[in-house]
Image (tube, rainbow, N blue to C red; front, side, top):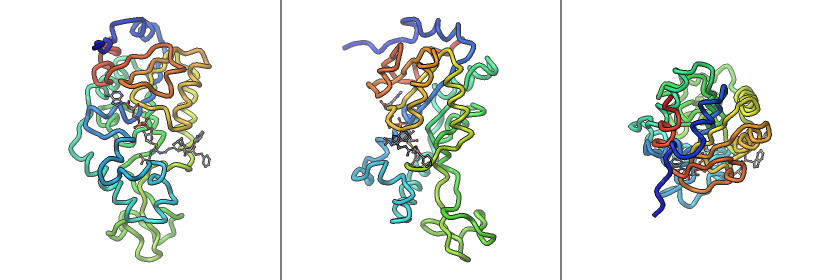
Amino acid sequence: MTATPSAHDGPVRDWLRAAARVAVLTGAGASAESGVPTFRDALTGLWARFRPEDLATEAAFRRDPARVWAWYAERREKLQDVQPNAGHFALAAFAQRHPGRLTLITQNVDGLHQRAGSEGVLCLHGDLFENRWLDLPRDCCRIDDACAGLPPYCDRCGNLVRPGVVWFGEPLPFAALDAAQRAARACEVMLVVGTSGQVQPAGGLATLARQAGARVVVVNPEPTDLDAVAHAILAGPSARLIPELLDF
Ligand code: BV8
């Protein structure tokens, strides 16, 4: 039984202490110890027969709005009583102790970084708790007056309400992605925390950082698609390792 590593092993903490700019890319694994199913695991139970790419798309929503809305409603419901974990809090506290030194980029839509106190989070995939119109809103479309339904809708023109997340096949918000790419190019160290690296262009930020000369550190209990670009891999849970790494 190999002991999971401590952040005190190896050079990573020294790299972080010496880094003027640190970029952190988080994925669903950063919320796993809060009890939020990871993105791939979110398709267990009722949704097990779907792939994320088949449900988190505009086409799927147009094909069966009620089913896709129900999946998001269930995920929102599950998030009602979860709390940020020690990893979320450690990232927020580090940024407060070292203003301007850390850029937090997340693929997560659960809002837990923000609830832990992180500010200026670059949310690449939107926000699970935001709603917006499916089609370009007309004067009659007022999101706060949408008619209750599955999904809610505009009773004047029939426009549907959709979750304010980025679906597969949709472009990422330009400002967030541009800022994330700039942070990846400028940092000395990039921590890649709790992501399989399977989704693009988010996963590509680690490669961008590596190519720009940063040291890339993967924090994940399992192997990932990004291990190949890592200078160091800490194979353990982020809620333990992130506080250990950022305790200065
Ligand atoms: C786009 C919101 C173009 C919705 C999500 C190359 C370039 C560009 C695009 C592509 C490309 N190749 C393919 C594409 C298309 C596609 C894509 O990436 N497909 C994949 C399936 C191959 N990308 C897109 O469609 C993107 N759009 O490129 O548009 C464009 C440009 C102009 C005009 C039109 C179009 C949009 C992608 C965004 C999709 N939306 N989320 C929702 O949530 O419902 S992505 C979704 O996946 C979540 O946001 C999630 O965060 C993200 C990534 O998954 P992970 O976070 O990595 O989660 P996962 O479950 O996979 O892994 C969890 C990890 O945690 C595991 O490794 C596990 O070991 C680890 N873990 C578990 N416990 C712990 C832990 N780690 C640490 N501690 C623990 N305790």
